[in-house]
Length: 229
Ligand code: DC
Image (cartoon, protein in one colour):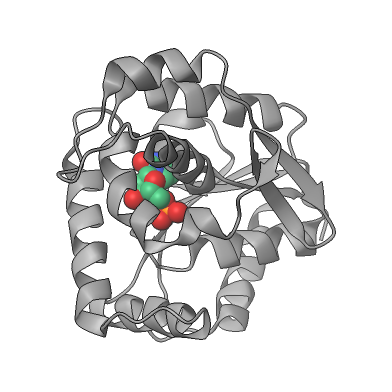
């Protein structure tokens, strides 16, 4: 298979396995993987650490806007995947913890935050050969991406997958709590005014409720072969 150095956009609901799938595709094609959610999470972590988000998830937008003028968020591509750095610190673990998951949707609904992240994504994708996952990649960040996938799966199945991941990392939460967080994020992400989560008209839907990662890869290989043989 000779896939040119295109941009593959993967969007979809929370915990549908977008990042795991994107990472595997990137490995197979020798592309880089850009996880746009990790960038929103890094901004959120910064805002939490600097008391810019109150207990009701209200964001101090003036303080955050000023901070973003000089905030350093960088990505490093390694053999193990793409790492996320906030002010020089690797934050791949803290950005995936529940405090960040609970606050990230309101932060990512702020237009100047989206602008900040979009600029970073364009910078890192300028050479092509990229698999990028998020909520608005195919609709807004790269509307001309040559391949767009929209991922979905049954909500309980998604919550159980996320629950299993969190259990391994020692977190004590019930499946119901995880499901509530997923549903809230899906709701905010799909209903916000700026770049809401929605399927691009030309995206192919992948419902992976009953699929393993290798079955998803098989599904993708057929599409790549049909298009780029
Ligand atoms: O993919 P994720 O769960 O790590 O993303 C975290 C949050 O970031 C998600 O709830 C919505 C937001 N996000 C977004 O608004 N747009 C993107 N392109 C990616 C993520």
